[in-house]
Length: 486
Image (cartoon, rainbow, N blue to C red; front, side, top):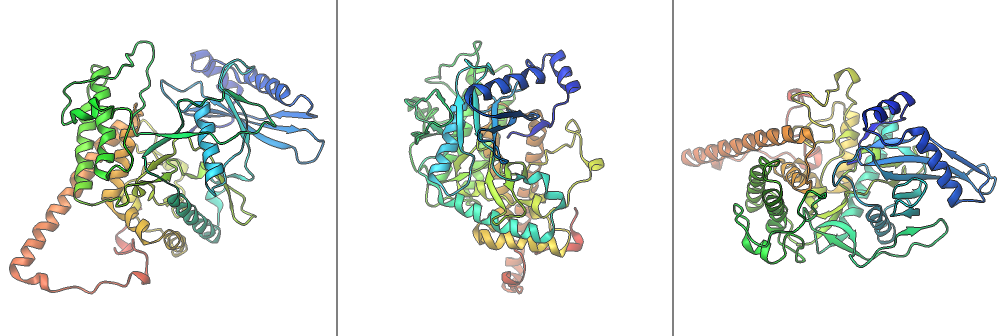
């Protein structure tokens, strides 16, 4: 996830970051570096303009404008380089970003930025690996969302539904991240050069472990780890998966990898992680074993993990409205239910600034976090309910049912926990909330089971209530709206 920490970095804030050591390059210095890079790459250009940078968790973004012809419509590009605020293992390498963008651009109908140039080394004026890519037409949806009309949202809902269906058609027999094959490495690309198709492989969930000079990168060949199959270690399963894994094995192997990694490498610092991963794995095992989620084909679809307004480029005056999707760093091949997350932000009113919760609050939940309550919440107005219905109609019943399934909501979160080597600080609170949601869900299941047994004993189970016609209304609107809590 590449959530912006601050947008236009002011000189005062930039100096403050530099003074505390959080920043190693002042903006004024970086701006000059970016200008010199553009001059080196486009020496015959007539005009160069470097715009204010955007700083994210993992990346630093610098928009630039290059006029090579003297026209009134100069080319607009994005320079992307690793954020100075990133930690160990943060983000993906430049060549991995290039590989993912090129794969999606050449193998799918989805519009993504074209790669213009890149350098995987630090032997350049930025003194850092960088990627330059096309700036897609329009603005990110976050700029417009609060002011969009219900009709515009409805059009966007239909287009998002089409995008979900396109992603569903892009399949792999392996689950995990898109990475270049080990033998393939193209260190750089200059403007005007042709980027050929890059051979890819799929890196399994949780197979990657970041380390520095103080860590031992050797994998254990044996050991005792609670309920981790010994052959996972001895057969090389810590680094690779066979194709078409059944869902139960695919869904538990990432947790087993993390348990082995945390236990073998950093048992003192991460002493709480292994037990938490074990509990998450055990819950995932129950979800799959009880068939609350499934994957009958044993192949996997492409999922954009960070499909939020900030990464959806739109032009409200065009048709289609969506001009492209950006930030594919965390894209994975995964079971279809992982992608079945509703764009609730499209039919929810914005949260007033004075009601936004501080990240250090005890009950803080990141706004990107999917919750069972939020997924089941009824939109506030008839117009917004129409927006949701439009999306539901576009994606189909299977996706809608998965979205509304609380077990699927939690299963998506379980895999997200397993995918990350280091949890953000608020994830530890989210873990505790996840356990509470799980316990509440299981209590409801147990209560319903007791009720069914009681009905069976007194014969009332033979009385069947009328089932409302699903075509009459949304699959989510089975509860009285008067009882909803926004």
